[in-house]
Length: 525
Image 1 (cartoon, rainbow, N blue to C red):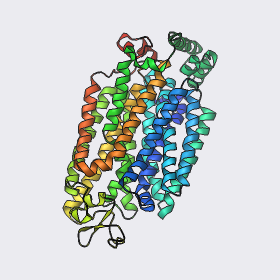
Image 2: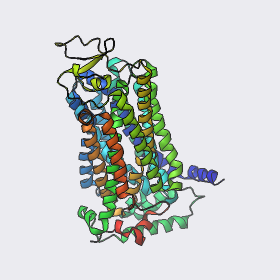
Image 3: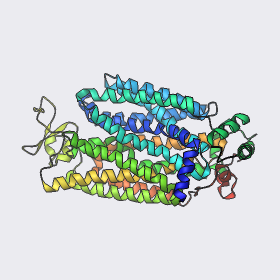
Image 4: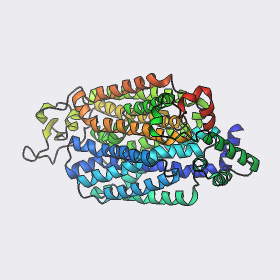
């Protein structure tokens, strides 16, 4: 019965529908990730890319995101949350269209970087915007909507890639469709979604804020007196910060360092799990594992997206019941276990061969042979040969390992299952909870700037792990790199877990007022 009452209340809240639109910006991240992941091998063949160029193609988005967030820090106090999302929409559409019409590698890189600028801003501002619109009892649920949208974008994107997988034409159309979807989403945001009441009061627009609070709630749920009381409460909390200029340097005061360190460390832990590398290179790894022919080979890719979506959807129902910290711990340990098994499965596929041999003939295993972009596997003879036309006829060389023995099939499918399980575990909590916590721990005056700094930490480490994945795999070997990811994510979460406040069910203003949280919200030195 309580569950039914909760669903009825969510249905009556207009806030629910506005937040669905804002959270849908997560779709753009999911669609872009699958667009580049699903077409990476085609781009590699089309532009004859080496390992470093492949890495930069995946990582260029992270560099763009860092630039976007730096610009956002400068402009955060000048524009509303809604205006920032609308501007990021136009930037995303421009970048996607640029990739869609690209004719060379440089155009792809530039387009990907432009997309990154938009994703950097939207990935940070959407959770903050949602948190400010949400009632306290549903805040964790609503902020997690954004992560669910990201993971919904995964199966939708992979399905789109499969449908458009018609030779060389799939790459531009995937990005062009993403661009058009983004513009449609921006139109919905512009027409339907109001500004944040907190943001309006912060800018001195009290009556507009009351109108928005009235708009957000069904009359059966909130009376006119309740609306006035809520607006006055917000005004009082925000006025307590007036006279204290929210300078960027305030983030590094003694009163805010702990919260900032927690926010940044959670983002570092999230990326140290190897999520970005696994997500961007999952299709590339699936191809090496032997999933290459017919639409049936696309099913594990779509299954990956579905599992991520279902895991994120599951977190909607449990984040406010289990609490942020407990769900974070469960998600982290599950992902670490999946990475350990993944590393073990690659022992049978690639062994501990380093991919730095002077000749392709030096590779005795198919997996390590195909990691070297200059080599290909000859299935009939079981030899690794060069793809360079002057050295051999490469037309008959395979881009994937044959699953012709029980051991190779078992190892390959175990690796596929481990990738799906690890990314699903990530989506259950580790992917969303850092965004939830950082959007809750700071005052109105500092929330955007603090979120931007934490998001920069996220994108810096996303760039580091993405741009280094293949090179680390070459030197350290794939089994070792996956085991390293497992160790790093557990170590990072363990180092900060004790300091994370449990904010479930507490109003943002109460978090700021409560003495136990006061070190995380003050502007004072």
